[in-house]
Image (cartoon, rainbow, N blue to C red; front, side):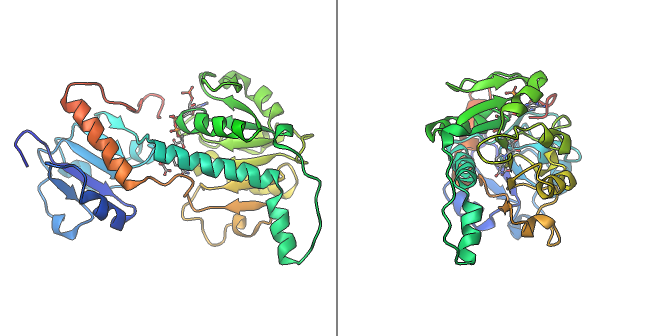
Length: 321
Ligand code: NDP
Ligand code: OXD
């Protein structure tokens, strides 16, 4: 460690083996304090300027009093913004093509599974039934994406390549994806009325908490080619009202759903979602952070910061994303 290079605190409560492995190559010339390592339990954290965190140990901010920049281990920052004692310093979120690509793969896969009636064919296979269903085309289906930021915009582009009609909704109503009609916050009902497959890629904020409720599901297009609207959520579980979702999936307001995120994670064993025939559950894996890519992104941002250049992907504390 040289005097001019502040160490980095790594306080990531995920993939401990990948973190250890990633740290063998990361942050050359800089000391790293991995808080998952018991040898670092009593370490003095004063004088350290940087921390990379995801659900960190409760005493991080009490002990690391000289932090200058925080780096979220994921793209979402709701878990950081609610931490007790969070210092008023820049918070950088994780933006990287590895994460973006993974999310688009998951979204496109889910849209295709619903388009191609995969849940029905899996059930037919279980029952050894050979029945060929009428097959709509992607061009007959409109996917509406709520949250047209880094992830929503990339998913929109890739869904277009697959032939879907794609529309987007965001706070500003601005995004630059060719061929995608955009709707601002005040045009939600119009957007929902065109949507056959609703994709949630919103951050969790005070405004987006509980936004996906029965009232919203009732406004989705009902006479589309899929025979009923489908809901796909990979944003945050806090945006969906799960009692309404179960009811809507039971009474036919929604035909089906794909859920990667939940109000409570891990999803409790008694959640009805586990056994609903029209629901696909994945365990918050739509776009896992690649640990090597995360550390490379943090290194780049620290270099910029130390060179006096502006940090990228800084969270706006006012809007919460
Ligand atoms: P961005 O910040 O790039 O985009 C957020 C989008 O949401 C923007 O289009 C923004 O609108 C819109 N938005 C925010 N608040 C509102 C609101 N109140 N009303 C309408 N639109 C709103 O985020 P990312 O695309 O990078 O990530 C989105 C979320 O995906 C993350 O916050 C995280 O929760 C989730 N995520 C989930 C993962 C998983 O594995 N399941 C992995 C990674 C992320 P505008 O464009 O006008 O600012
Ligand atoms: C993220 C996530 O925010 O994994 O990156 O959910």
